[in-house]
Length: 349
Image 1 (cartoon, rainbow, N blue to C red):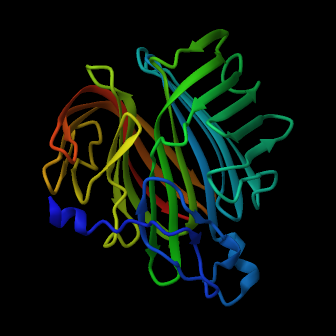
Image 2 (cartoon, helix red, strand yellow; image 1 turned 45 degrees about the horizontal axis):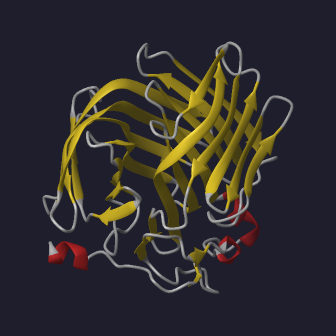
Image 3 (cartoon, one colour; image 1 turned 120 degrees about the vertical axis):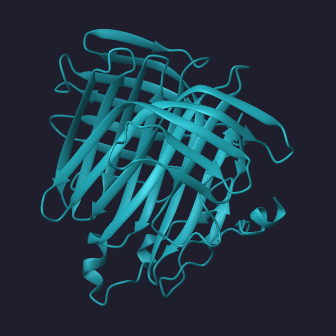
């Protein structure tokens, strides 16, 4: 275990993300976001006016309910904005998804950092807003044309100041980088109106997650990501954040599990799955033996986009995790029927 932890470089000093020359000032991970995401200092093209077209920003929220998964996203990949939502019913496997694309991210407002500000998109079809509050996140969505009967959400996700998250800053090649915050297990309350029904979220059974990303990627990218926010048999909140793909992970990986608001960091995690049949069970095992999971998919959300400038294919598998995780102190936490997802994503963007 000590050799594994030694490879995980902890960022502890506050400061800017990028230096005057556009290079990363620090590389590693932290349980809280502490660097200022000064994207205006990015420096990867000789023609500076083209740089905004390659900077990617997104706020992706997921809501785990006992019966449904809801997702809300506001994003800009530079030359287009993508605002989307989707819903999966775990019992019937009924699925609905809708996306709005805007040229050059028109109408998309995203904050500089993950710790304050608002993410907003509004037009005649949709109003979506994410607001950072002192100890919570407020999510609003009003999408009359979503599915049959529309989709409306007014949600609060509790995020106390001491709630830890998985923050990683890594280089991608010489001049590109990834600044990412993953928050799991935020207690969710509020209401969702969908298909003529009203759902009241109980924070004892409903949890929210956030994938907050900023950076500059290579034109062709590939990654694998696994995530969950749920409960153990003893009622503890347990989150997973596992993945690999792009970027230099020599100083830090994004692998961790989150138990009752505390991050338990992991090093390398090996994934085994069949990319020719994603419905077969997946296996994840950490190098130090502190995580060993079997993931059994029950639904394949396949999303394909091909609009010349952007080409993307993702298989986001929803399923159930079984196995165990182990804390740094040696406590074993059994994992059984933990609903989450695991995905493989290929992108030309």
